[in-house]
Amino acid sequence: MATAYHRKKQPELVRRTLLDCAAKLALEQGLAAVTVQAVSLAAGVTKGALFHHFPRKQALVEGVVADLIAQLDADIDAAMAKDPEPYGRYTRAYVDITLHDPMMTEGGQWAALHISILAEPALRRMVSDWFAERLHRHRDTDGDADLEFVRLAADGAWIAYLVREKPTDPVPELGALRARLIAMTHAGRLGPADGCRT
Image (cartoon, rainbow, N blue to C red; front, side, top):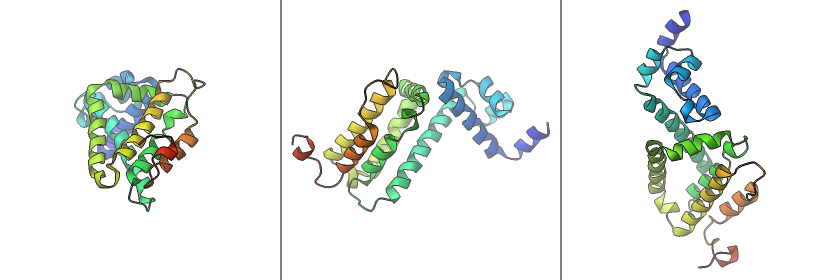
């Protein structure tokens, strides 16, 4: 029990461990596998300790999704910090990060988690609220219809990868698609020369 006593002194470590274990279960087996019993067992804590940090299973699942959103947010911010051109900066970062999603290259493990998030109204709302806030924050540099088109194209490619039955199903070559979409985010690049009608 020395371990349990030690953990009581580090509540943030316990919370982090619970989130990591829940995310691992969700990644490997889907959100249905994220049970109080399974997470507390994987984290090496009592159910009471789990409930101290997350009063309900839904709070734990929402914590996992909030963690994923925070990581996505940080990745986008890091990509934006490297981009000197204000126009389209958020869209370029969004496309780059979205089309680098690990679920596209790790045997579809992320697919079950993403589908679960999209299927659950409360979780879908969390993602939708995050996206709306990002769009609002970057409306001055990324608010025009051309950039919306690029983001929607990236989302469409992401969904195509998400729903494919097997890795050999036909989908666009990711690197070329990402490069083409990013090229379209520079001022004046979207138009008839890119195959789009104006």
